[in-house]
Image (cartoon, rainbow, N blue to C red; front, side, top):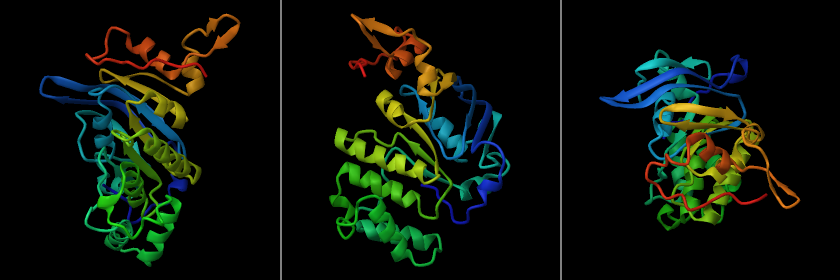
Length: 276
């Protein structure tokens, strides 16, 4: 988990929070990214949607300076990820696919520890405010090992916010969570954006992108094949009509239309879109 210690005044930095152009990455003969282009507006939730192996985590690792691209450029909060890595790290937070909490410590102790490591004043007050914000006050004194999956994930996101980073990367934040826990995390993500935090979210869950994102990009075989708002993506397909009721295509309809029904990487997609 990366997070800010000293946040630059990003409101004075022109342009998008994230700007990516021509990003490529290969592992020997395997081309993971084949020229990714995207922009993420400040204060928005941007969903990078794709199947397992599409390259979503690779994009996040490059943008968070954990991995170097082979070619292409990327700027995060105005900093070049290749030449200004320290500036990038000071202005972001990264929450990976698995909650990075210390199970021996209580929820509050986890938060206090991170605040102290970042040399912030009054770590206890910071911890108490984050516990309140993420509805964890009653569980704050309990060991994190006793938390449910959704509570652990909320605590993990809360830890990522210490220092008020203007941009947070959430890599598959609800992977493996039950439906109730997923909704809890969704609410936490929405509150981040409402507070002005820019969120880049990677997910393979179509309903998650549909519920949360201001803009959605579909990453397939290392390339962004569509990028737009949910309304714009729906317009890629004609509206279906059942009797006299007009049915708008769901994000799942759009996803499989642009990716191709026959190319599912061997996965059994059992769910299909429901009418809204």
